[in-house]
Amino acid sequence: MSEFRNAIHKLATAQKSSRGVSLYSRWINRPFGRVLAAAAHRAGLTPNVVTAASAACTGSALLLLILVPPAWWLGVVVGVLLVVGFALDSADGQLARLTGRSSLVGEWLDHVVDAAKLVCLHGAVLVAGHRFWAVAEPWLLVPLAFQVVAVVTFSALVLVELIPKARGSVGEARRGGPSMVRAVLLLPADYGILAVSFVLWGLPTVFLGWYALLALANLLILLALLVRWYRQLSRTAVPAAAGT
Image (cartoon, rainbow, N blue to C red):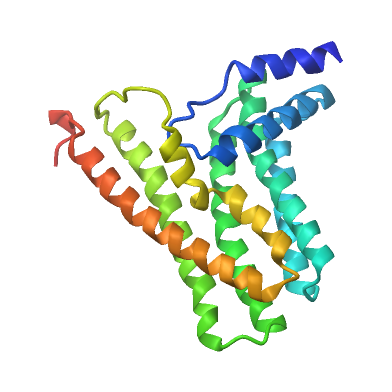
């Protein structure tokens, strides 16, 4: 037990910055992932195995959505699987830092699983909605639109961090600590909030209304972030040798 507690303590002092992180990820997902990472460390698991476990949890939840007619218990099971899968997604990186086993392959695999998760989740909502719900066909455009927003957000976030590093650029230093207002405003865009929302799956009308509101909120957040990232890159100094 002391090894487990020591791992928890080490992980708590080696967390990523909380800047730009919503309250759910900061207060729920990261601490949950910390516990799972410590448990994985005690069990002798590697970060890539934890990544695979995250993918398995998420994949199982999405298969249930597609194959099983909506019911209250299904929503609970799917919600739990998605939440655990998200926490394991945090745990793999924490385990890598704890054990010093970070690798390019692990980071690449983590991003591949994240991308697949975003595409497949909204795809599963689309398929399940078509199969089980008596909704007007135009509503099926909502998960398609949500899928586009999610993919563009993920891609833009990765690129705004990757491109300056790849070109040896230097941006403005970030000042101050994490903003509580920003952490609250980003809640609708947190995957954890979407995962928890599936407990409403057994109430189609309620779920569809909430899901559509989340889609709209994510679109507005994406537009705001695109403007912010555009300005951020515009202020980033590019070395002369890297100019085009």
